[in-house]
Image 1 (tube, one colour):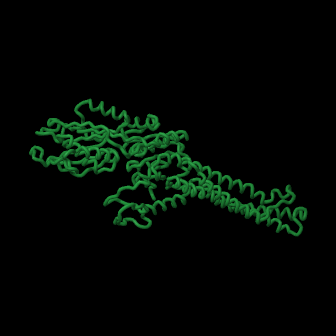
Image 2 (cartoon, helix red, strand yellow; image 1 turned 60 degrees about the horizontal axis):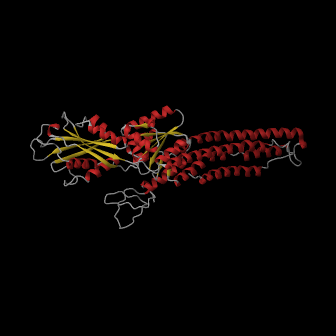
Image 3 (cartoon, rainbow, N blue to C red; image 1 turned 135 degrees about the horizontal axis):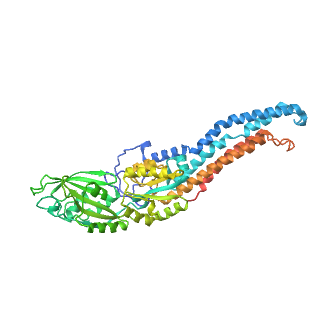
Length: 520
């Protein structure tokens, strides 16, 4: 029910289940860890309600007008009474209808002014449009957490920044190529044997370490390496090594201590550090190197094809020589809707940028595939850098809003710093929490829908407010009797004024309900 996906998802012992989903086969024993208002469905409902109740900045204008509207109308009504009372007293039956006094004559106009004036229409113009707009967004698979404020800001987006992995791309990368290097003993230390003397042991190290991470690149590396550990026991690093705790550094990679416990007395109880991740993490931060330049040429060719390289290094902390044992080339193809979404946004006058932690060569290759110019690529970003880059783009833009679309934990800072944070529904909880709009179907094309809908909602708010203002500008003078003399005694009876006032509010509501006719 919550995902809208028709394909069953396999669950095993220890997995989290969401209330509202359907158990298709055997019975299961479930432990309720969240009940009532804490369930996923209840939080979504509460989020929608909060969004519908939140005010758009433009609502503040209507609130200020409403605060002065009543005193002004009362003053106009009193002035109307005074003017017509004086006129009726001076001119008598030439102005005042037979059977009516000057007081009753003037009071009729004053009451009509009070009745026809309608602050309700001004007050309803924004919230009704916001409520209907957020409901229409939900029907299109978009949860607008920020309500009216988010819709108004989304309508003014001038620049949108996309995260690459998992947002513009599928987020389901696979390893396509691998370079392996088993170091000789004199390349590691003065030991009688290499540290990891086979591809199987290197792959077992990768499989063990990467299996602890949920990052898409780590998942791909773990799956690839696990299938190539040969006869070595699964979940181990060979038969001579004991693994320590895996430590993950956001946006960089991970590290793990491994201790030798085999029969080689020269290695026994020695602790080595394995580092796996980006080139910056393995080479620049931990100073690991390849033995020849041939590897660099091969890796450059991979990155030119849009592939991401994951490096594996191993060394003793005080070793002068630090070796790169392997490099994996991982390809994450773009989503099928990425190119069309980028083209549609650019067609709407929105500048599209791409931000990624990848090397520039890889980033530009992917950007080319989705239709983003190379000068609009921000590469080599750490999680904290993403937030800072968003601030820089906002400063450079000046006017207009900056949106950021992402799905990972490392995108949360950027999502929070952007004027409009857009998270994919299949992304991390932190990303969803940081965003002001969530694409429940994780379809990039829904971003185009969000922008179009927000612009339509804002236009409808302006239309409603303009109509309400125009109604009062015309209705109050008519009720005050400006056409009485020229119109041969034309007056607006109080009951007609009351009917007009009610119709003005109904008109605003119907205008907002017309948003249900919106089509993406």
